[in-house]
Length: 286
Image 1 (cartoon, one colour):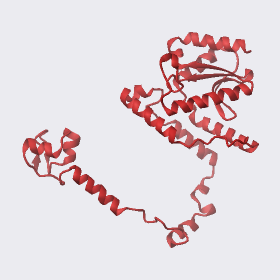
Image 2 (cartoon, rainbow, N blue to C red):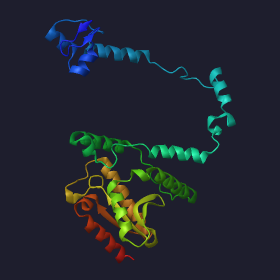
Image 3 (cartoon, rainbow, N blue to C red):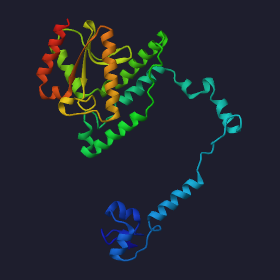
């Protein structure tokens, strides 16, 4: 047994993992301070890591069925034939509706520690900045499936509407805290029916009064660029949100809807004033 000279722990060998994760030391630093000792592996140096990575690439480990098909391999052909039609495991599910409900219920039961928190609150300033940069980079690379110049067919429109409703059924429990707070308060003070995440055509309206064609959007200061608070458009994700915001407002206006946008910072600074703004907007357009 070897005794770690830093923590006094009895070990068979002084491993580089123990030194790295327990004491934030390298084997070279340990040996230089306490003298040579027995190690479980060769020194974890830059050269050894590069050698291991090179060996891994040269081996090119692939799954057993790489490049094989059911036409060229008997085992794959047998598996394929055994799972055709009613033999497919999916067909064993008798109540598809209950099965789908249980999956959604499981998703809703997931406790997301990031819920109702800003990136800065959860990660800290530096990590949040890295996240925003990565989101911007991925948004820039993402292929945008826009219009080809031709109008959608009625079949496509109906499909898009169905998908919107399905998506909303899964994200109802992930709505932002300010939006939920405003909705709950408006339900108490308004004597008309309002909807949260109301599906309209291809969009989901944050808070809607369907009978009056009124939409209330709650916009995050960073994500939708509140210039009064000093935010500027510097990330691709912000540009994308601004484009969606513009097209959504134009689409609703063409359909006869009135849109009121409220910043999250306005809700946080003076919630009562924000409620009054909504009441006045509804009264003006009633």
